[in-house]
Image 1 (cartoon, rainbow, N blue to C red):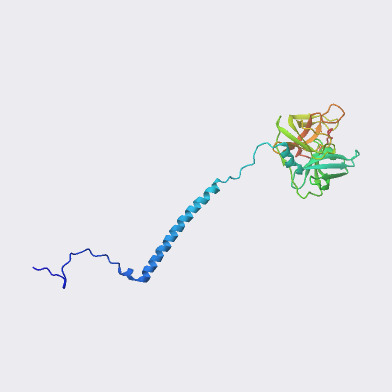
Image 2 (image 1 turned 180 degrees about the vertical axis):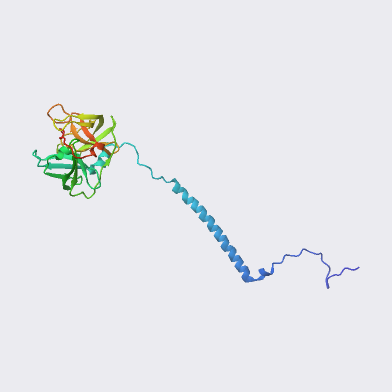
Length: 278
């Protein structure tokens, strides 16, 4: 039997048939849409990868940034205490008490401008003038008084442009560093330092009874320091200076001062005591 051959030529060995594109691929417009879609899809994928990686890299530095932390408990130096408290300390001039013009010290202790001082500084005064750290002056009136503890609060008529109330602290311990700021002998903003020498001291007075529970300290104070703040090494007011001890009649400092603890001072109210010797 003869094998049939293609007309006009010799027989060639059979070869594998090449795959033909499906019929839908032959449409040029459809091919174009598919290719464009693939390109867009690839672009979206690449963009997503870049954004994902970029976001991860941008978050790392933020995590490394220091976060807010509580204020340090490291003790302040005397200059730092002075800088922190000076805007809160005022000079008090009281006149009309029959003893001429008396000077003392006070501390702004409230956002409304309330001033805490020693009662004997303003006792019997017909007029009281406050001088702030920025030089502003204002008349003031006694708002409350505790003669037994020798504490008074004053309400000024005018406040300084910038009002800086002091930060009030807690208890004191023997040996703790303290700073006193006041106006002894009219020398404004005098700053001295020392330590707490004793606690629960009792001061005897000729009139008005004893004052108990006082802080004893050795930072220098003199007449005019009365009513000023006794400050710890965190810049917190822990007492109100009310007296000094001197066995002579000189009335000057020999190393023993007394302050009413801030907790007792904040309970100021009516009393019947008399002023201590400072």
